[in-house]
Image (cartoon, rainbow, N blue to C red):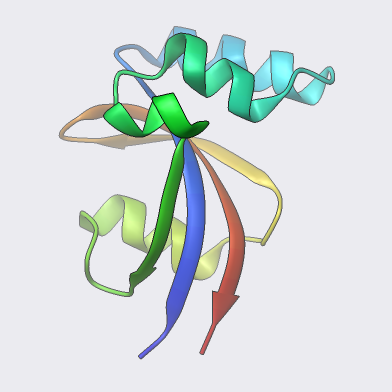
Length: 93
C-alpha cells in the first residue's frame, strides 16, 4: 500500500490560497505560513500531516498526494474543507 508524508495549508478561499502560494514561490517558509494561516489544527505543527496511506484522505487530496511531484507545492486543491496548498515530503510504493 503506497504511503506518503505531507504538509498542507488549509484556507477558506482560492484567492487566499493563491496569495500564499505566491509568497512561498517568492521564498516564504511553508511551515511559518501554515502556522499563521491554516484553518487545520495541523497548522500548529507547520502543516505536518505525518504519514498516511493511499485512500485515507478525501479523494481530491489523495489524488494530488499520490500523483503530484514530491517536494513541490501543489494547489489550490479544493475539497469539502476549503482550499489547500500541499507539499508531499516523501512517498513510497
